Image (cartoon, rainbow, N blue to C red; front, top):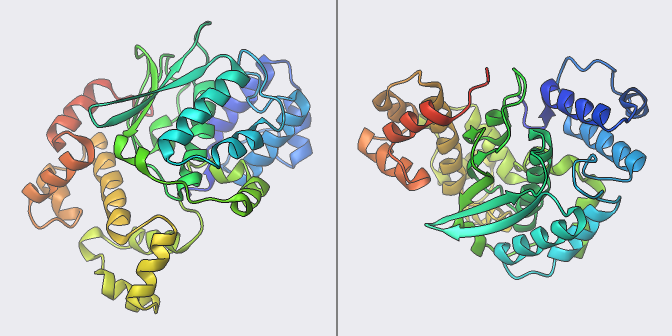
Length: 336
């Protein structure tokens, strides 16, 4: 599925949420030009328009899923609040404090230990829906990625609530293993990213807000920019045939020093792009269990299985075999 598309199952979650809160979903769909029966993916821009329409109707940018409404305009104030921070950790802690003041429940706490950053959601009331927790992650993680100018790979996501209906593939949405019925709701990523500096200013924020929330609905996966072009080219090519940096620069008709500098302005480098794409392919293949580890190493362009083992352990802290075993035991499948 295209990165900028929202699956029908998530549209169903949204409409179910509106009905629970007594909102006329049909009139909102008419207002933004969407069909009343969603049977095909919709663009993130269309979903963003629906989000705005809901916020206007309910005066709540959190779909009525918090203990208190997130009044219209809160998202913009959140972005302004984190713009002057000195690091991603500083920004994240400030964002979580802001959302606690606004929503009351649920609220998030940042826990940093063993090389991992865990955003743990607390909730004083009854369990909320997976949709509510997912909306919290969209806001927090999407803004974080925008602020530092790069996608922050997620290690895994846990939900205290049970899995949503059949067909709602949260693992595909997050691009990482997802588990339900866990002791706590949390989103986990590498703590090293907390040191990243914010790269945005007031001018960038004005442009960002003009396109929000459509630009964070897909986890800010570099939908624009030079890094997006590179990802598209690599996506269409087997990893074993990915070009060297100099060859890539030649194919793009950009001098290598210029290409390196432009990627740095986007908070990227060629190695990190390749590592993210290999990591995603490896995890997907191991979760599906369709390919032997040695064959997977070859498909991913590694010279030998041992090199793949070292890289995968660096990415996840686990060997490929350990990851596959743990995924088989606890990671939800699309059929759940």
